[in-house]
Length: 250
Image 1 (cartoon, rainbow, N blue to C red):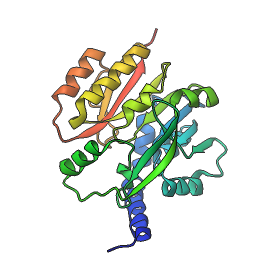
Image 2 (image 1 turned 180 degrees about the vertical axis):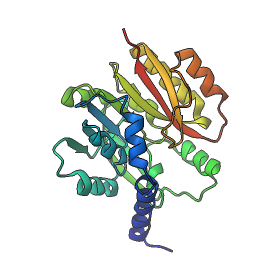
Image 3 (image 1 turned 90 degrees about the horizontal axis):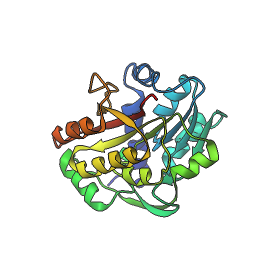
Image 4 (image 1 turned 45 degrees about the vertical axis):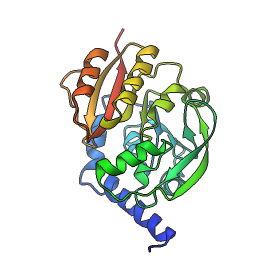
């Protein structure tokens, strides 16, 4: 059986191939995010993993606060961005309240490491038909989006990608952020709808969404809260993507 160190190195290599070795991936990210992020703006990257979004945000001139609790991913981020004074790397997770939580780490598939309960992990394994294991459990510090805003200021854009823990992250937010995104899975539709409810309670948002890692808009126009809910309910039950929310112009 492969050793833990070998599995970890292989998992990180797979992530690097996934996020950095795709032709023109950074160009596609810059093109996608540039209308959402103002020059000199502030971005929160919640679930930074290996930092491909950090690289895109920095290329657009934004300052970045990156949250990543996985130690090996954090080591990679420090090696890559540690000398950049416009990037703050935080070795924590975010949730509904300050405290501690158990992070379940997959050595071979670190992209699906999560604080989510076992039901989600088992469903993911079945849906993707992959032999995914979460071999490590690590107690991590948890803070809230409100705490980050108090420390660094309100971000212009916030990306939340925490493997079905997005609802808990949004429960730690008590004020609207101009633009944000959160990952969704079609087989946890009630959680996605609750995320939308939380955002609607914070501000007058309109929505769009992007399937998978396509960095393309699924809808030609931004959608009302009612319309995005109808759209989410019609999706097939074996996919994922990101919902984007932006405050309507006053």
